[in-house]
Every structure is written in C-alpha cells, then in structure tokens.
Image 1 (tube, one colour):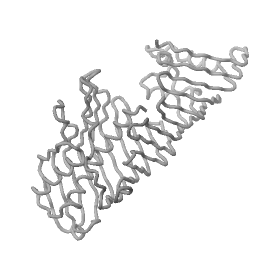
Image 2 (tube, rainbow, N blue to C red):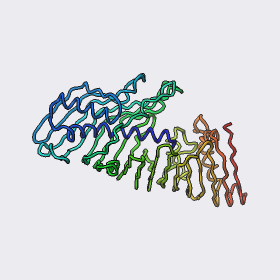
Image 3 (cartoon, rainbow, N blue to C red):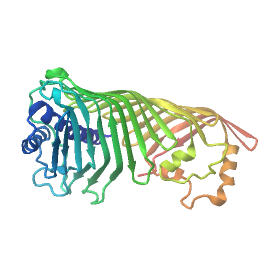
Image 4 (cartoon, rainbow, N blue to C red):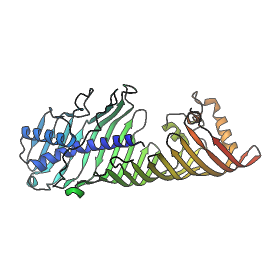
Length: 400
C-alpha cells in the first residue's frame, strides 16, 4: 500500500470520526444550553476548528429533552478548500445522538451513542494536482482537557468516491452501501493520552463496484495521533467465500519520514476459482474440479520506502507446497521453492474445460503482462511418465 493511499484511508477514517464525535464534543462538553440556534453555531464552529473547513448545517435540527436529551442534526456538508471546484468533500442526511439529562453538566456525561445517515465522502485531485483532503486537521495545538467515552458510533448507507482528474473525470474508486458499527470510542486527556484513541468492536461493510460486499472486523484499534500510528492485534477481511486473517498489524506515518507497516496474514482454504473471479476473471477450469484448491496461504508483511515485502511465504495448492518471498515495488520480484508437481492432473483439468473456456483466455496472460521477475524452483515434476528433476522456471519482465 502506497503512502498516499495510506494517508487517504487515514483521512477517510478521520472524517468519519470527526463528524460523529464533533457533535458530541460541542453539545456535551462545550455548551449544555440546548438552544437550537446556539447548538447549530457551536457545532459549525467546533467542526471548522477541528477540520479547518467551513461546515454548512442548513438542515433541520430538533432537540428533545428528558430524561434523554436527543439531538437530530439534519442535512449538512463540509466544504472543499477555497477555490477548489466540485461537490463538497463530505455530506450527510442526518446525525442522531443521545445523552442523559441528569449528567449533562458533568465532565463525563452518560452517552448513548452517535448515528450518521447517508454520509457521502468525495475525495478528489484536480487537473492541477491539488486535492481537497490533505490539509484537513485541527490547527489548535492545545491538548484536550476532557476525556471522551462514546459507547457506540454507527454510520448507515455511506458512500466513498475517489477521483483523480489528472487521469480521468470518472471516479477511480467507488464504494457504496457502507455501514460502520463500533463499540466504545475512547480518548484520554493531556498532551500524551489526549492523542491516544481506542476503538473496539469495529464492523465495516462496503460494496465496491462489481464486487461482493467486503466485511472488515476489528476487535480493537489503537491510534496515536501524535505520530500518527495505529496498532491492530487482529482483524478479518471477508469477500464472499474468501476470508483473510490479519494479526499484529502496526502502521506508522511520521511527518517527513517514510511510512512503515508490519504484520502477518493468513488466507483460509478456498477454491482458486473464487480468487480468480474476485479478480474479475473467469477460471479456465471447471468450478467442480477436484484440483485447483488453495489449502493455505500465509506470511509476514512489511511496508518500507522501497515497497511491500511478503516474507516467510507459505502456499499450499492441492498437495503442492511452496515457500519463499515476494517484493512489490516498481517490479514484482519473487523467489519460490517447492518439491513435487504432478502436471498431468492440471493439464487434464484444463483440457476437460476447453470447450467452455472463457473467450478472454487464461488469466495467466494478465499476470504475464505485469512487471514480474523471479524464479520458481521445484525438486521434481511428473508428466506422461516423464520425471524431471531440479527444475528452475525463470520469469523476466515483459511489460517494458
């Protein structure tokens, strides 16, 4: 993952949190006088202070009291930087929150949670290379003096778009039907703990175009905003029958220094056909074939200035076991070692499916179009009674 993409994801997450928690901060912690016009001005002022942008709260606002104070903030938006053309950076239909009246004047009131409906985030880079998101953030260096403890945050029916007008006016990425649910959202006070956030029980669901719904579950996320850095002890990503497990993830993006990331991953057993279809291709073999089964895929991940390194890689396809490493930078370099390969079973499986093979051809053609360089070494291979020993397959970059 590139530093720009990491920063973009961090900005999306920061926007979601700022919109939800900015309402809590202003209504609960800054002004307990629940007058609609006053609250509207206070919310706009705090969000502008937190984000460095003009915030429009033109929609209807309703406040109900006793015993739970309920605040509904109608349609609103966060503007682009001055002079930046296009739709607003963020828009929403409704924000709901509740806290108990008896604790309204206390430092840590009893909160029920925050719900945001119809959130739309439009990240853009214009033709001149200027973007509408990189300057977001508070300009106030004063550390927070009041702790934050929100029992839950929920976002319903959200949409995220990313457009780079240097390449095209059409979005490069669109995810719709996004829902987010969290457990506790906590932040301390002071110059150290005031920069540390803990978010528990994250459940994020999104539907990128032409894909099934992607589900991300994170039991605990810890963020140190002073670096910034994040740690995730464990997480799972699901896409249809595909399940990826992540562990011991750590990401840091210090100002003026290369970003770094490290962790481990493991992919649950799954038919290779499902992986090929998730990549937008049709498998060249029958889905009911007894072969082409991924039995395991695991390794360690590390992101450095040079690119992404996958080390301690272990791959199991049917009874074939491969080990090695892959690095992804300007080129994709790999080194894999395996023992025995029975070619006949795969040749027969491909031949049996030849009459119904997709007109687009074998997906390996797409792979060969990538900047690949590396070797695959096998102890032996068998085909038609012919046994071959100590085989080396070498791939040279053909994308130039």
